[in-house]
Length: 317
Image (cartoon, rainbow, N blue to C red; front, side, top):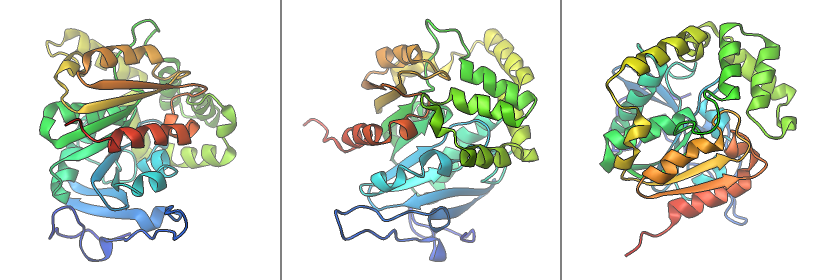
């Protein structure tokens, strides 16, 4: 892990923080990217932000979702090689999830502000963004607030609102149950709700997620987001608020947007995609079959192909 330090050049960490990712001489494929070789630190006035970096090219910011034991690395580790062939990939670890330094405030609010701190700290004025679930909401809110700073936006489930299916979705209910009373069995029930193919829920995945999810600080942060009391308080506040929800402002989104969705998503059912698909001015929707909430994992090759085609497509003259 590199030591935090000052910044001397737009977009590049100093000294030992720089890691040049090697490339294979055969077929131009990326060699294996490890957790430690890609890990970086960025010192900010609100603590250290940790992130993973791989590849060279235009900057691509990847934002992770939420849930027990989540990290940016665990969301995107198997996708980095494909994207690092074309982009300088930056996987930000949000505060409140046990990797970056915690920040004061609600984890959703600190996630949004951490994106600004992160890009400003690296001297990056404009990026493409991929956001998984909660990360898609954060990326969308950032693009709404800073329209000139996001060129293209890719979301994975998560955004919009339920139209025909009951909300919150089954997976969110299981997440709330686990957060209120953590148990290994509850974690397995939640993990099974995330996927179409339950064989993906391996013992290794369960143990990895359990260790992080039961860390006291991480669990306290999760309860601010997904505990039943937090849900009730947030619903009451939204009902009493005069402020429009973000999904009612999607007509203002200027970034070209690709919405990606699993047809069998039980966390954010596919009917949630209708509002963003209809109201974002330049939006495309790609729905993947035999796929739950983790599209980038369950439909890895097809999802990478669709996203790379979107991100690398030439703008019309």
